[in-house]
Image (cartoon, rainbow, N blue to C red; front, side, top):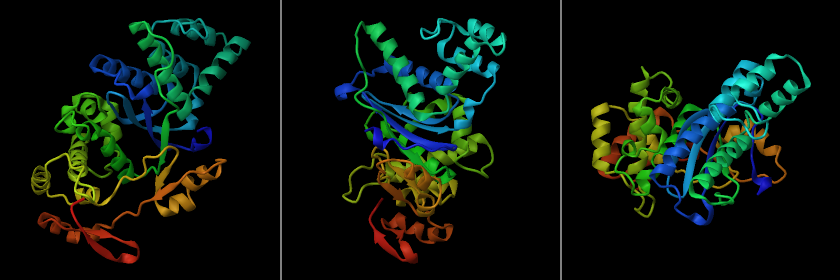
Length: 343
């Protein structure tokens, strides 16, 4: 599995999945609450941007934006991130709490201070180190709380490198926030407590801003979240080719579209998220062949599959209204189109 880990050495977005060992449903309500807290702490410590997440009974999805350059932070920031992860406790690996770390670093370029800086920065700005921190910290809490021992996670986490464009990041985020709806745990995404969208609605400003960035040019944050909700409803109402998979009532979706007057939602009904394999890359043909996606794949000893997605032009939505009659148009290479049933 090590050969399948795909990373970028630049700012990059990752869709991460992690599963409980033996597919056991060990994440009930209390456990999910603690997992979300651990997620936020690990993200802050690692210096990454958490875009959204969804934690279910036996697995979790996370969408993050990671900047390797975040390692190059000053001492005050190192102490802040350390405190976010460990609180007032002492870290076992160094025997220090946040106050002790601040004192050690304040002494200047001492050998101890240099070693502390090196070890802390090595754990930041990296997708593998972020997941190591998250899973180890949560496992430690779980084993201590329930008097168990050993690993809690089935395998190495899965990651998909996602082209960092607003429409595509928003599409993947919507897929993640819809997981509870697909699993039959909630009627609508906002009804499920343990997902990033619900937490954003509840007031988490960092998640609000991250999701709002998927809609550049839209007025304020709440307007962007309203647009994001339409995207999720659209994706949730889309059925597979065999007619299965839809979880959100299409009439509710069409009513939302009519009330808002926006047609961009149909883009979500056209695109298919067929990229959830470990180590894949998702983006446009140009990004995968000449851009950073190609560069990241080239650095791997065993390159994975990559899925190109072509963005439909706004003009293509001239036929989108025909979906109200049960049919729609799907853009094909060369400007052709074909009729396709719902979704």
